[in-house]
Length: 439
Image (cartoon, rainbow, N blue to C red):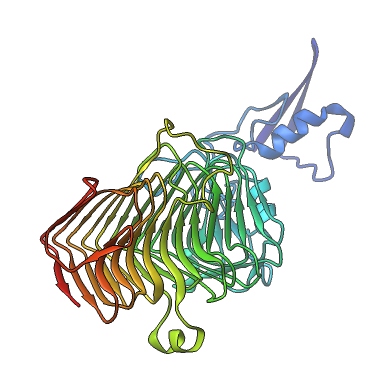
């Protein structure tokens, strides 16, 4: 076997021919290559591409499982798909926060350091990962490693994770994972998919100061407010559950520009859902169940203040409103409200449609304040203690085909004038028709 090595230094070329001779101790001086050349060699996928070296007999590049093949199971060079099936841009890394595992990083933050925008982190479920104060400043998907065989990975923190990617279009997603910490969102989009979050502090489980939040098939449980969207673009919740302790001020506070809740359970809090309704986009609640708690829990802690509050002096952006300012519209379609003194409260100046909602055991079923424009149709209010529907003077709109059962009080009251009649017009501002009243 003959091996010929050509080393080129500028215009000078030295040719050495070795016949049947191998020099294991021969090494190239460190000064022969720059730092960038050495780094290039370390990262090169072709072991024969070392700078200024020409192997005359290199032959075919090694492949398969040969000794020259570079293996890094924790990093896949192929792109992955996102939640919508779109191809991603980043690689995949593995994280194991328990006993060290081959080809895995030891923390989420270390994994983030080795990813580019749009990458993915697979978290092993052997031990919880400490995410106290974790800063997520890039788009990333964090999910349980499929090698955990159905066990969810746990992210645990004594302080909140902070999501603030550099780009408004960046998406930070958690999937099939458990979070035992609070999360703040400042920028970009935060997605939950099959996530269970538990926040044991007295503050908010999820705090939004900007951006967009979407959750699908996920749950959030908190001692304080489950979601506090003090500011943001959109909140979308689908097929999930959100619960706060009975003493919490509210379970959901949604002051984002828009919101869309579908087939979602909201439990606990003195107020179930507080909607600012001063944004640019419509707000819709479809098939949403708002409950103070189970019957045994209500017997212990008492009824809540309001199931759903829309607008009013306590919501909004803290700035004064003007009559000419546009406001978003609210549609509540189906679902139920139970265990609150007031089922649904529609604040001054709001525009709302409430249809097909079951309100159980309220003091007052639906309340419309002065200046509210409302359309109430096909709702069922049972076992009300004060009034089924109570309208302040100045409320406008109509109520059609509502079924009201009163244990005490009146069926419908407008500005102190109450009636059990099926059809009635109040002050030419509010029209009732098809009311079925059992008082």
